[in-house]
Image 1 (cartoon, protein in one colour):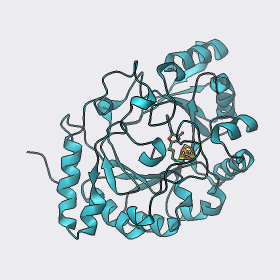
Image 2 (tube, rainbow, N blue to C red):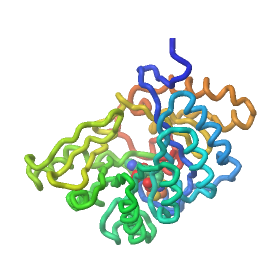
Image 3 (cartoon, rainbow, N blue to C red):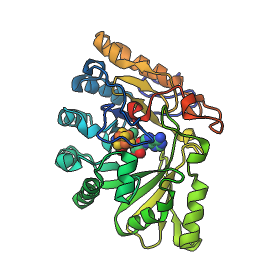
Image 4 (cartoon, helix red, strand yellow):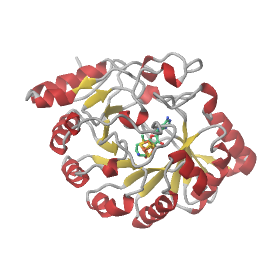
Length: 334
Ligand code: SAM
Ligand code: SF4
């Protein structure tokens, strides 16, 4: 019998990591995540309030969730971010955030004082013009400054770089050089297909291509393979005598589905049991109907239906982003 205080799917994977999207909105417009014109804005009433979010998060924690990551859209533009972070910090779980860092200086103390130590920051180029063109805004200098501030503050910083062929794949070594002089972990993320992001099979850069560049630049003898952490999705390496390290997240060509422990809660209160799954379970409607006792069985049931790999997508090779029946990444919560 499946215990009722844990979230386990049909493949015995225990789900104890919840990623909550705070908003579908963003102050950037990264090409791989969001259409240029933004996404259709919906009435605020369609999204979880701070109180509703805490009620739902609490149920997940009662079901064994040990880590919550805030994401979005851009989580730091959420109006009542302080109330949400304080509320979540009372739940006794590890709290983390993924942000574009545009507003990080404003909220750095709030995060630190509420126990957040792990901050993932997206930065897809070290060249100002190129970054501003990918993100379709002009915040490069501010983001670089805020990354420096966060490092000084003592946060564990991971830098997320979505590698796209012909766009920024010539910066792999530059990013690794950065990880040699700063205590950061650079993570090269394989470009993934979502609604309206112009993905195709050839636009991603695989783990093999990255490592070919790395070995030819540094020599195999100077690259150390680091031990994988439990349930972690990156394969990690460092160049000898570096302050930081680098990792590769190749969700498509070398997936980590076998050990997946992640559940996503969208800003409009729906569970997605996999990034690639179009199926959703509406928890916000349940909270609003006053039937809080129904939340736990619904969560358990939703994850039980999780597919073994990639939300049931058999092959990406012939796939185009227009074929995808899913949300844009910005409205899923990455
Ligand atoms: N706005 C925050 C940020 O950019 O860090 C949080 C939300 S963003 C959707 C979360 C992560 O998803 C980012 O690191 C981003 O680079 C990644 N991401 C978005 N679209 C992606 C795609 N098509 N393929 C791979 N990663 C993607
Ligand atoms: Fe915004 Fe993050 Fe998506 Fe870029 S990746 S558009 S910063 S949500």
